[in-house]
Length: 117
Image 1 (cartoon, rainbow, N blue to C red):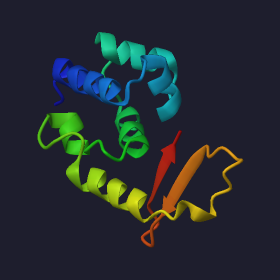
Image 2 (image 1 turned 180 degrees about the vertical axis):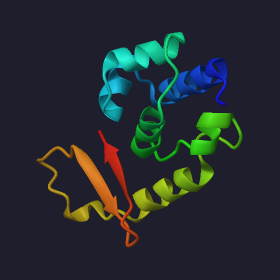
Image 3 (image 1 turned 90 degrees about the horizontal axis):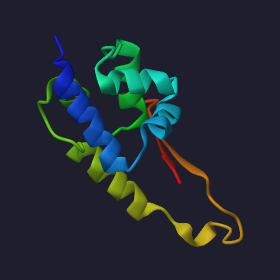
Image 4 (image 1 turned 90 degrees about the vertical axis):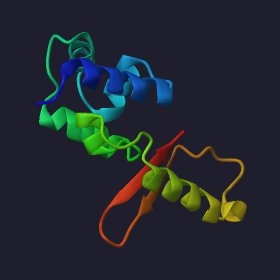
């Protein structure tokens, strides 16, 4: 079973890492703001759906680390692949007069990564 206090500490670490408020985090993962507030205060335990939304929205968050504190955050595999992806991006064809809102990287296995401004 997940230790609530330790889970809350890891969730707060994610918020700090991305410099997000609880409400911005809730919007990003697609849950009600009160859901994040209730988890952070310990009123409610996180549901599986909540946990999976965090992991899907933030590829650098390792599921095992989030649940059990084992492993590392940010995940080295995801962080290095994100860095590699950014290094191979050819910016010469980007229209400099337009503002990029989101970049999607689609992989052959059907997975993807999204990078938002």
